[in-house]
Length: 230
Ligand code: GRF
Image (cartoon, rainbow, N blue to C red):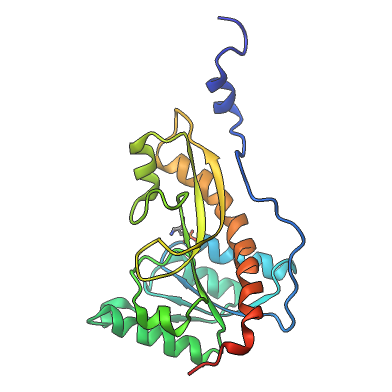
């Protein structure tokens, strides 16, 4: 076999970033965006948001993190990074609506103007969606509209797609179906399992989420006068 004829071997050794958004000049926000974050998992995307703010790229203050799981990594990261954090345990709420009322109250008390769902593993209801209409965005590990819902990475592997990725989108009542704000794509390699593909997607999530938050922020501020907490 001639050298280099097996391109999959080249990809295995050096997985290329396939398609990523060109991150241009970051928009400026004066005063900085006042962001609330919701997380259930390890919190690596929370930390990516924090890093983008502390490096001065994303002009935002992380007003409040809400977690629904007392032992999640996001809570530990918030403590280390000194991000205000509140536990609202879904097990203490008998309905999704009751949980969302508690979220809205906490975000309002923290003077949050827009909310980023960074790995929130609960379905949200119109109670939250309407309180932050047009100001609630979510991160999902697929190129939407493909592979909505749970285990998007597993769905991508099972389907045999050769390109996977992540999306940041507006939240509406149908899960993972609001308008897309930004996406990044990565290759799926023949050797991938769920862990290796998820890691490759997550590297892009960490770039994409702060950038998409800034893009959405331009819209939030354009509509700023229309947003009155109530
Ligand atoms: C991310 O991969 C996101 O796409 C999914 O949940 C994961 C959260 O990861 N919705 P982390 O908690 O930010 O590390």
